[in-house]
Image (cartoon, rainbow, N blue to C red; front, side, top):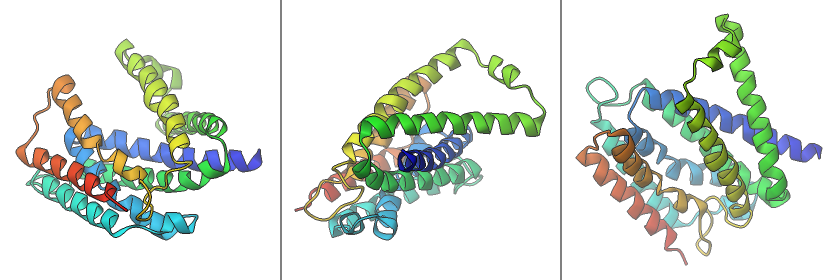
Length: 244
């Protein structure tokens, strides 16, 4: 039980840090731009897998995977180089925060591959969510303590729509996604050798879904270079999936 708690706490702490970086970053950049920056996880995941992977299988990355990762990285760099986040283009504070979040998410993905093979998803996922809640409460307490604010007042400032979104994110991307990810990475390595499917390829569709959501729900304009970069990222993911 101690090992399970330590594994869940590790994943929760790094994941919570990623969420904080990502949330602050999105507040200071666009959703599509953030999604493209998050696509740099296509490079970070195999890089971390090759260096800190817990098994020989995880540390072996196919050439096609590296090629797809490099294409994704190039597309992301090209799309963000002339964006509107930083003055005169380039990376702004929000962009850098999203990149920090990406590093956290990639670390969680690589470490989860090891933990999911050791502990059942039905036990690991709830434990990870429990410790994530504790980490979030700790962050709230720290913020209120440093800022001299009242936690109840801080929570009371949230409108009903925000509570609805929080509930949805807790159930869908939270409980359901965490459980499915733990189940999937029990058998799918983060960035495996030539004969295996890879988890990271599946995640490469994030920019596409984010762009659709941003356009339909938020009404954010999508730049031409962001469209081209998104297509290149998805194509690169398909390329890296054609192993064997």
